[in-house]
Length: 309
Image 1 (tube, rainbow, N blue to C red):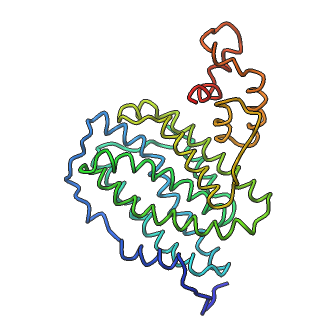
Image 2: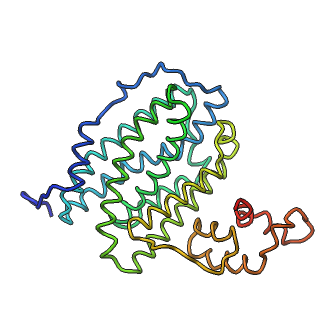
Image 3: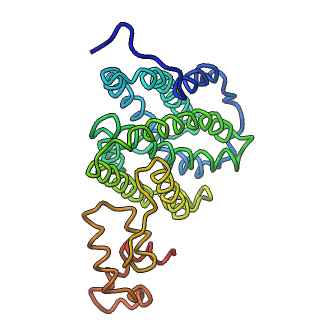
């Protein structure tokens, strides 16, 4: 129920709201004639790789419009205030990335070409406002790592400059999500914590599936997709510990490599990974033998990722 005079206290979210107001920019502020520094093949590869991020900006804009009334109903006035500026940021990112696609001269991937994007979008929509903010934190870390690659490697190019602008917005989004979750996590049940960790595992698993399709495109623009995802997973785990969701995490009994892999899957696969890893610890050493049905297991993601340790 809306209140005429809701409780309003100065806090970090109000300060982030003020920063957002002062840091507004638009597509008109972008120098669209700046060089691309991409060949036609690289432009197409970038367009494909950028697609999950592009859809993520749209999903965040839509999701915020759904969650904002929930925060108002819960009396979370400053979160509601901040989220209004968040909506503007996401709308701006959607607009400028749309114009970037026009400059690249190519289109993003479709859902038909990469259906995992729809799974990711639908997973973010499940649950309440706490689920959504946790999903936004994960998505923002994903976007931040992607944009950072080009902000650092092409600071004078169009996409490098655009990435730098978007990163400043993303830093406020992450600060909001961390602050909000640090206040909510201590009062939720252990069952609820476990569900949020499962959500993290689900999203990482879908991210991995998306970028498995984009390995050739990543190589085309000089990005190590496997290293990118490993760094992303590590940073998300650190954030989970920082907000109190996942205390220092130890899972004894997992062989080297398998332990890293299981953090990217849901709980339904964790026990299977542990059982298989225990039974076939030395299997990856002979994965080129191709002489039995177990060679299929050797070549699966379980041991492909284990080999990267």
